[in-house]
Image (cartoon, rainbow, N blue to C red; front, side):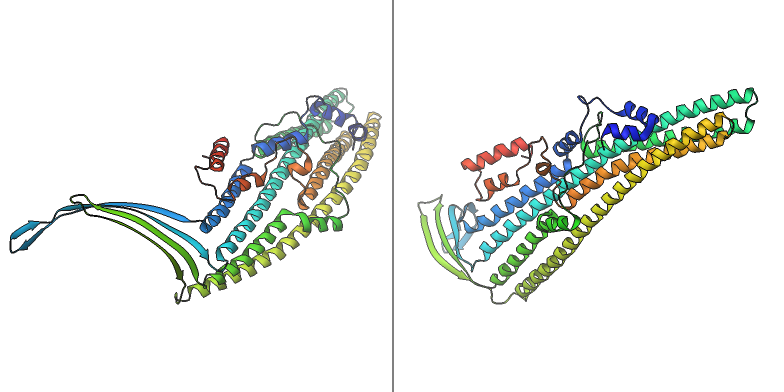
Length: 469
C-alpha cells in the first residue's frame, strides 16, 4: 500500500507518528541496503564458505590417489661393539649411511578410486546447496529484523502520540472538574488511562530496543533510518505452482539429491574394495660405509598385485553400512520434499492471513476513527462520559496498531515465500554486492595442484586474501 493511501486510512494521529519515524527518501536505508549489508557481514556465510572450500579439497585429496606417490628416506646408523676371537678382542665400530627413493603408482583398482572421486564431487555439490540454504536463512533473518524495527518504531510513535492526547484529555478533565462539569471519577479514569499509556510506551520502547539488538545480530551494524518497501516482491504463480518450483529449485532438496548420488557411489566403491589392486612400485637407493670404501647402489621396478582374502568381515560390513546410509539419505530426501512443500503452503497461508488482516484492520481504523470523533463530540455535549471517550480512543489505537502489524506481516510473509521456493538469494534479489562464486575455488583445486606449481602459488594468494592462510 502506498504511504499516501495508508496515511489517509490511519488518520491524523498515525500520520504524525509516521512523520516522526519516516526518513527522508534520499537518506533512508532501504531493505535492499540492509540485505546487502547482511550478506557482506555474515559470519555464518563465511563459516560455510570455508566448509565448502574444505569439501573442494576432498576432491583434490581423492584425485591425488590416482597420481604417483613418491617418498624419500635417509638414514645414518652408528654401529659399535667388540668381538672376541683367536686374536683377542676386536672393535667392530662402523658408521653406515643410506638414502633412497620409493615410488608407487596405482594402475588399476576396479574403479574404486574413480568412484570415490565422483562421490567427493557430489559432496561438493551438496555443500554448495547447503551454502545457498544458509544464504537464504541469513537474508530472511535480515528481512524479519528490518521489518520488526520498522514495526516497533511505529508502535513507539503511536504510543507517544497517544500519550500526548491522553495528557490533553487529563488536563481537560481536570479543568471540567474544577467548574463542576464532571466528577472526580472522570478525572481518576483519565489518570488511570494515562498511567496505562505510559506503561504501554515503556513496553513498546523495550520491544524496539530488542528489535534493534536483533537487527545488529542479523545485519552486523546498527540500523539507520529505515524505509518500508513500496511493494512486495513478485511471487509468480499460485501456491501449487510455487510448490513445483520449490521441488526443482530449493537448496534443501537439491542438497539431499546430491547426498543420495554420493551414497550410491559409496556403495559401488565399497564393493570394489574387495577386488584386487594393481600397483607399479619402484625403488632406488644408495648405501655407504663411512669407515671404509664399501658402498651399494641398488634399484628395483615391479608390478604388485594385492587383494584381500579375509579381514574378519570388515569389507562386507562396510558395504552393508554404505547401503544403509544410502537408504537413510533416500528417506531424508522424502522428508525434505514434504517439508519444503509444507513450508510453501504455510508461507502462502501466512500471506493470505496477513492480507486479510490488513484489509480488516483498514476497515477497523476507518470505523474506529469515525466512532472516536463522534464520541468526543457527544462528550462535549454531555451525552458521553470521559470513560466513553477514553475507550473509543483506545479502540482507535488498537486498530492502528493492528494495521501497522498487518502491513509488516504482509512483507515478511512475501519474503518467506521466496525463501520457501529457494529464490531468496543475493543473485535472485539482484543485491548490490559482489556475490560469492562457489565454483571458483573448486576449479582451482580440483586437479590437486602442488604448492610449488603456478596454480598452487595462485591458491596461496587467494588464501592470503581470504585471511585463512
